[in-house]
Amino acid sequence: MSIWMTIYYVFCYIIFGYTLTIMASYLFFIFQSYRAQYKLSIDMPDDETIKYQMKGSPLTPAVSIIAPAYNEEVTIIDNVNSLMQIDYPDYEIIIVNDASSDRTLELLIDTFEMVEVPYDVAMRVPSKPIKRVLKSTNPKYSKLVVVDKERGGRKSDGSNAGINVCSNKYFVCTDVDCIVEPMALYRMMWLVINSHVPTIGVSATMLMSNGCVVDEGRVVEARVPWSILPMFQQLEYMRSFLIGKLGWSNINALPNISGGFGLFDLDVVVKSGGYDNTSMAEDVDMLLRMVTYMRNSGQPFRIAQVPKVCCWTEGPSSLRALYRQRIRWARGLFEIISNHRKLFFNPHYGPIGAFTLPYIFMFEFIAPMLELGGYIFMIWLLFIGGINWNTAFIIFGMIYMFSVLMCFFLLFFDYSTQAVPWYNRRRSYWHLALAAFIEPFIYHPIISYCSNVGYFQYIMNTTAVWKPIQRTGVKKKEKTKNEPHEDNKS
Image 1 (tube, one colour):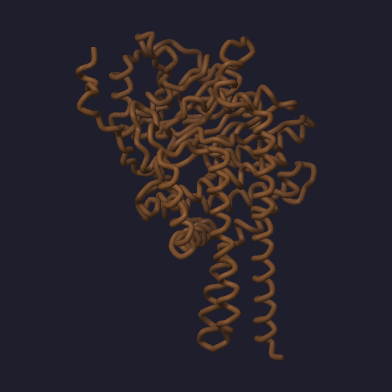
Image 2: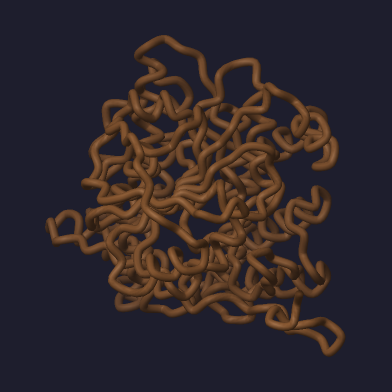
C-alpha cells in the first residue's frame, strides 16, 4: 500500500470517528437539556407565582441594567421604552452613550427630559473618562440614568463605565437594541435567590427580533423572520440556548453568558477586572476570568441558564453584516483558546476547565478547519477518481438526517416547554422546519467560511475593526381604525 493510500485511509477514519463523536455529543446535550428542563419545571414555577413571591418580598435584590449605545438613533427610544416596561420591583437603567456621532444622546435628553446631575463615580474597573451623568426631571423616568463618556470604541468600555456607575449588587449587561420581555428579571433573579450556592451569572435565552411585531417597546407578536439569513439565525439561536447552553448549565459548565442579555454578580466582576476592552470576545473572556477567580479563591458558585426567552435582538439581515459579525466571533474564539489555555484539561477549574473548554477546542474551534480540509480532500479525490459514491451518499445522508432530526427535537422541546411565545406556533414551526432542511446547504458553509477567514486574520495579526450592525428597526404594530394614535390620546 502506497503512502498516499495510507494517508487516505487514516484521514477517512479520523473524519468518520470525529463525526460520530460530534453526533454523540449532541445526543449528550439533548439529554442534559432535558434533565435541566425537568429540574427547572419542579424548581421554577410559572411567571405569576414567581412574581407573587418576589414582588412583595424585602429580600428581592435590586438590579442595574447597563446598555452601552453608539449611534443607535434608529432604535434607542423604542428600546429604552422596552427597558422601562420591565416588570420588577427595584431596578435602574443605565444607558451609556459612547460619544455617538448621530442624534442618540439628543433623542435621549429630549424624550426623557434629562439634565446633568452631580454623581460620585467609583472607578471600579478601567474605562474611558465619564464626561457627565444625566437624570430625568420627570418622576416617570426616575429609574433612568444616562452616562455620557469619551469614545471607547467597543461595547466593553461602555459596559465598564456602566459598572462604575451602577449602585446594585447585581447588574444585567445588554445591547441597547435588545427588546426585553417584561418578566425577564423575575425569571433570572429567581434562579439567583433560590440557589444553594452563590450564583455569579445567569444567561438569558435570547432570540431574533427580526420578523417580530413590536408595540411600544414590547414584542406583541413573536414571529419567525421571512428573510432567509435571519431565519437560519433564529434556528441557530434556539439550538444554542435551548439545547447547548441549557445542557452546559445542567453540569455547571456554561462557558458563555451572551453579551446581549446576561446577569452578573457585581462584586465578582470587579474582583475579576471587569470587561477587557482589547478582547474580541469580551463576554466569554470575563466569564472565564470570573470562574478562575472563584476557583482560585476556593468559593463554590453556579452559572445558570433561563429556559424561557427573555430578550429579543436584531440580528444581521445582510450577508455582509453577517460576514463581519462571524469573522469577529471567530477571531474572538481563537483569542479565547490562546489566552485561557491554562484552563484546558485542568480539573482545578472544575467542569469548565476539565470538559467545556476541551470540547470547544475539539468540536467548535477545529471543526471549520477540518471541514475546509475535507473540501480540499474531496476535490483531490474527484481528480483521481477515488470516491466511493455509494458509501459517500450513505454517510452524507446519515449526517444530514441526524442534523434535521436534531432540529425537529428542538421544535418538539420548544413546543412541550412553551419556551418561546410564538404568535402562530404552527406556521412558525413550518418555517423553522424548512430552515432545518436547507440550512446544511446554505447557512452552514457560510459560517464555516467566515470562521476560517477569522482564524486566518487572527494568525496574520490583521488589525481588527469592530463595527456595529446597521440597525433597520423592527416591524411596528399597525393602529386599527378604532385604536387612537398616540397624538390623539389624552
